[in-house]
Length: 451
Image (cartoon, rainbow, N blue to C red; front, side):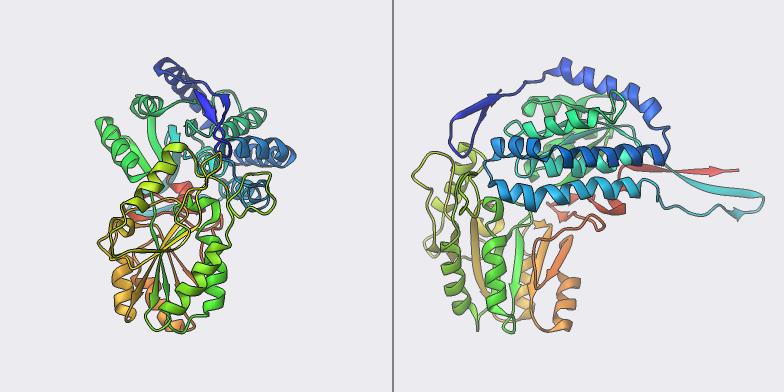
């Protein structure tokens, strides 16, 4: 497969196109490795994950070059914002491997003692996206390996390099066959999902991909772990600190060119402060500068590909007449797949740009009259991954935390994740959680042992 540098639009290398025979070989090796890896102690698995984390730190430069070559994102963004928390995920699950919860042995019926075991599932097929290639690979492999599973992972066909670099580093600290990577396209992914040795399929990707995988996995009842798209609402009430909201959101909405499933994309603002917010936010968005990895002043990088740039352009080209672009709106006339930070107002809840995830540097702004309408608009989309509420009223924040149908709600901030707490959604944002002890349990199965 030909790789394209999204910052230049030029060819930048090649990657293997794995076929069914390659997938079959990887899955069979993973099955064989499972027989011994599943019997290792939590201490042994912890030690391996900690050594992999240390290796990623030692080889940070290699990982930075690999990730930036495929994504075109600014060097500093990956090195300082993304790589440290990625390594932390490995260290978190290294500890979590030794802290599996369970029911204490007890007699629930006379003369019988019950014990609850947590056992690994088996061979896990994992498919990761192109927006955060290394981070998403680690989010997937860390809990799976910590629980005693083996893995066959397929990175996106446009961004395989940092995942391959991760696998090479991990191979020095894992038995052969425990972690396997197959590069390829959608057909490679389909072969992996359909393979009979796979017992669990984990995907981070689009709702379309999730539906396709769920249909394929149903044939032999594989378990699924799906983290799909987001379309995050941001509720800004009349008592919010507008300067703080504009300052944070003008960066967080466009980080990674908006290619983030938790990006602050739908901003809902109380009608009393709507115009003031739009004016300040549009000016701040206009100062957000797209640029290549060597541009020290760049705030975000290019879109992933020419196809994805066309997708983002299509969402803007289809805007209804009542919508207005108040900042940005154009692709940059330069090599690469760059697009301006864009703010759209005047949209209605039924508009496609509100209902669908653009996954680019595009933000819509809508007014609301009261708290009830804000919550109604926030929940009136198919996705439910993340949301934030901005207010000085503690009770209002708590009400929003209960009412918003998303996997995470931030108050007076947006976008931060931590290894200890879950990351997952509802509705068309999928099911199953990355991160946290819950993420580890998703890669186990309970067994009742009665004595």
